[in-house]
Length: 195
Image 1: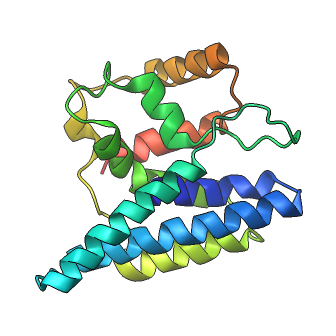
Image 2: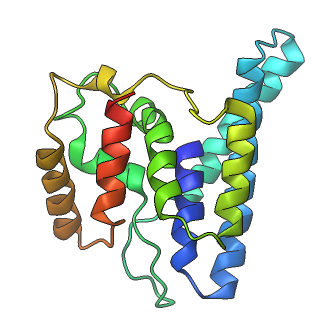
């Protein structure tokens, strides 16, 4: 859920329709706040029954809100297209062939540090929602945001970055989706595999 939130916050910098921006900003806030609340409870190792129940509730709601944020990068009826989410683009093209030892959730979680690194390089300095979310995440987890195992743990051998990027590009062309810049996809994979 956190990966989808941060990626959507970044993608919104390319949207000019205020109505759509407000809608997605509210969803990003709800999803990210629930995900961060749940993860913070885990980090603090709260073992009280009410803390565990709240953490579970937050996790479930974060996943539900993330489902609302998943974008496929295809034209919608209102002529505004938000690019396909990076975690969705990577997972739909690379799972299970390159990463057979994980599933969509573990793979997506393993992308968070690499995704943050890649999106930070490309972010518009005026993208307030992205900058605020990034501040909240790094305030809790630090600059490295190591909240999941490295993506390399889910790989079979050492996957070739160029081959994986070609698979993502082929998948995007096949689906006719609008994807993030190749540099974001490459940086996300490189950072995620090399930590």
